[in-house]
Length: 98
Image (cartoon, rainbow, N blue to C red; front, side, top):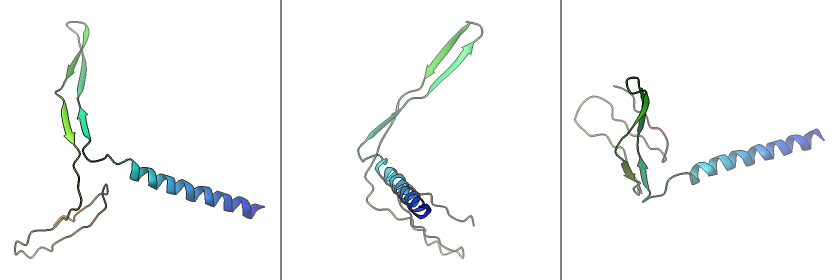
């Protein structure tokens, strides 16, 4: 009975991991989507005794289609080593500091 309970827990864990991974893939914003943002600042004016709200201009970004990309170093004939990194969309890429 304990073995069946353990197998059930392993199956549930595997399903949970697969669902977490698939939800990340489906949460990416599709190309052509327009994203709007507006900042808001509130402060209390002690002289007037009221809260003032200041709104910024709208900022917009349109998501572009990126089929492929490459990070390639320039060959500037120096003795410093060149670095190339390949990464999936949404991942973090780091380069060593020379």
